[in-house]
Amino acid sequence: MVNDIKEIKKMIVQHGCHSGHLTSSLGVVELLYSLYTTINFNQKNFKNINDRDMVIISKEHCRLAQICTLSYLGYVDEKLLDGYMREDGKVGHDMYNIVGGEEIAAVDYASGSLGHGLNVGAGLAMAKPEHNIYVVCGDGEFQEGSMWEALLFIKQHNLKNLTVIIDRNYLQIDNYTKNILDTSSNIEKMVQDFGLSVLKCNGHNIDEIKKCLKEQTNEPKCIIADTIKGKGMEFMLEELGFAMFHHSMLSEKDIKRVYEAIVNE
Amino acid sequence: MSNNFDYISEYLEKILKQDDAVYLLIVDGLMSYLIRDNGRNLTDEERARIINVGISEQNAVGIASGLALRGKKPYLVMFASFMATRAAEQVKLDLCYNNANVKLIGINAGFGRIAVAGYSHCTVEDIALFNALPNLKIFCPSNERCEIEKVMEWAYLNEGPAYIRLNCPFIDSTGAKYDVKMEKLSKVENGQKTAIISTGICLELARKLSEGIKQISGNKPLIYSAHTIRPFDEQTICELIDQNVTIITLEEHAAGGLASIVSMVIAKYGKPVKFLPVFSETDQHNVVMYDLYNGWRKMLDIDHFYQKYVRLIYGSKSGFISKDVSINKKGAVEVALKIGKLTFFMKEERQKKKKGRLKYKYYLFGKRIL
Image (cartoon, rainbow over the protein chains, first blue to last red):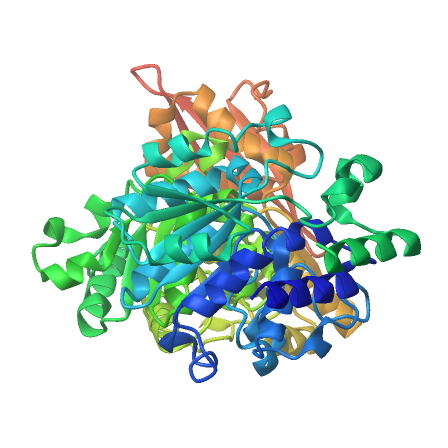
């Protein structure tokens, strides 16, 4: 399992080191890996969207991690990632099976803009109560008002087949969330006050995440997964500065360092 | 015949009963109007498919898209103004980009009756905005029932996102019957030399304008209703250009709407044709403000409703719109209206009524039209 994570992370660095969102992606690998290996989503049913659970990536910055994880697990071809975030590439922020075709049938929804996925997830959950929907959101994303509209709706309609997963890394592009709009430190209480059952876990511990995913709750479930943005290369935050750490366009020298750090993690 | 809004309400109720994939989403404020007798005619299961999402337009579009992506057929009914601007990004991404089978029904589009509430409630930018989005079909039926019926039927039978722009409930159908073909311009009245193309309830104005033009030139103009804005019927426009017909467009919309679409066809076709686009320019938003200053109650009577259209013909430079209107001693204003090479005059009279309220009369080509 540890080896799987390492392989996926290597893949992420390979494809994302020249442009775009390396750090957001490195922070959620364990989360996405746990999700795709726990939920009702397998080789037999993944092409039939109406016959399986769905994973909505609401924080689109970790799209790279999603594609790498899916590719590692054999749901999409790694070739898709050639030219990621570049003009000749197929994948940027958003890609979706209707736009991208059969080859990305495993990718459920795309927006590229924050504050959309949870609302759509609520609709999906309402449409088919027998299947589960998992929405991966960022903590900074909760600065969008539409997220709270969605939470209200989820509670009101008791959408227990929907799981909100908050990837809490305390960071947004420009700074720590606490220095801009603090939707991180108190998010547990905030979401609880909206009427959801909140579970907490270490977002890098697969067993903990899986336990949370399986746990039954009285109210619709929200899992707060504490993560480290850019896990494995977090030491570069100070060197690169907040924005460059997020966008992570690295020099050849830095790419080598990051790669080594991840291999030796 | 029932009111158009009642018709929509009955229609939605009907498909809610006949198809268990149909969901009806509302963003508060319309439930009691749209669902008759609190849904007493519906079963519990049918009622469960009516969702008042609450005062959260962005959420509503997201929820509808989610339902559609799981094979449901959601209808989202709300004021057009909030759909077009408040939830624009959700429409762009959740709905259009994901090609979700959601039918958006914007009511009180244009100036609508709700215009009494002010500029915030007017929708004169939706066509321009939505026309730029992928996959979305745009319909703007007139007040005539034959068009509304056809559009609603089409929306139910066809997959993919669609926006239906309705101006109801204010003007009702006259019961006129003409051939309505989807994705084509409907020929409402036959004529020659001049063609008036209207969209939405401007059809009423088109008829009035047609009478005036007939009186002054002796030729009865053609009247078309553009109920399908996208995809637009370019072929009919090309035929009109070939016949060297003067084209007048009427709409309750700012630049980027019907007039812009028709101009593009004319430009693309590369032949000169007389063209008079009539739409609401930016400063014509004052139309609403003006009426507000004069008391919003006035807006509720039909005269005031029509005034807005008449002002659209005046053009923005008439001075009538601002509060400092200079009116001659007899209380009349004359405004030039140019159509092609012809110049017509329009006259407005203000008479003071007994209780101190102003009464307006409108003359076009010497004939009182309003």
